[in-house]
Image 1: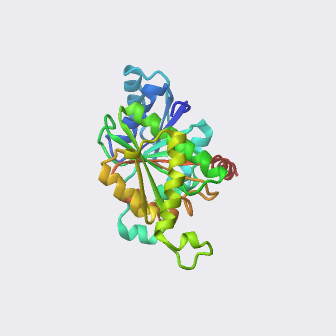
Image 2: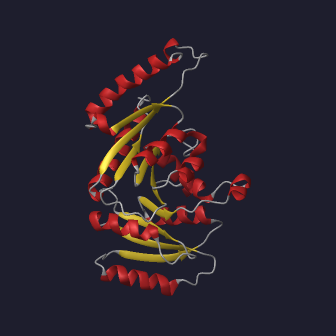
Image 3: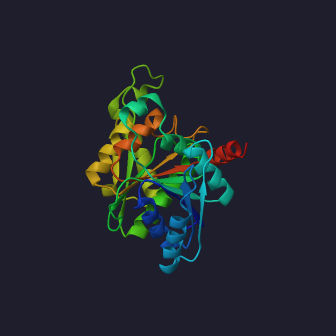
Amino acid sequence: MQAVRSILVVLDPEHAHSRALTRAKLIAGVTGARLHLLMCDKRHDHSALLSLLSSQLHDDGYDNVTHEEAWRDNLHDTIIYVQQAEGCELVIKEHRPDNPLKKALLTPSDWKLLRQCPCAVLMVKSERPWTGGKILAAVDVGNQDEDHRRLHASIIDHGFEIAKLAKGELHVISAHPSPMLSASDPAYQLSETIEKRYREACKAFQAEYDISEDRLHVAEGPADVLIPHTEQKLDAVVTVIGTVCRTGITGALIGNTSEVVLDALEGDVLVLKSEEAIAHQAELARD
């Protein structure tokens, strides 16, 4: 978070009270980041509101505030276009779940944004203040390749920074797979052996990142079930997750069910990406 110098705040023309702006003010108040307010609407008739918001932010002590109205082919393309043009390292947007019928027929716009945006995205889901709350970081301790190691470091670093910013407490969740009788490695055919391997990996992880035993949660099962379950059990205000894959969230830690996780979580969600994914998606955005 401390490295974020410019934040893109996506405002909703249909909702006057912006949860996204509330979170952006909290982060910028600590980091000193520039706030760029974006209203995505074909009508382009929100200049007075944007000027008022910018003026209020200046009065509140936020000296570096800019704003614009924009619209391209769709919502997520508009956000990504402006994010690239303004060089923002973080996008903050309020998430409102699509209705089930629409979701069954069309890929949700917020899922497309998470998949294609070449920077971190904070989806704001709750009005609850972060202050004094629990922060949940989701990692795949069993994956120790270089891309995952760098992503784990980013997830934990962001988790600690949010916990410090919010005067809260960081917890970590890692899911390990269920036994597979068809697995070529016998170690993955027994639940006890899998858990033992993960516990050993977790000890090294805890030592590296200074995570105490009472703040590490390891369980068997799919991540898209365990992450929301742990979040609700802890009553976490923010969950930090990540992806290393080239095409965005699909196939990563939360697999092909990222939209289910996003809707299942009750608190805010910060999605981080590997350096490789960011570079690839920035290249696609430029094209």
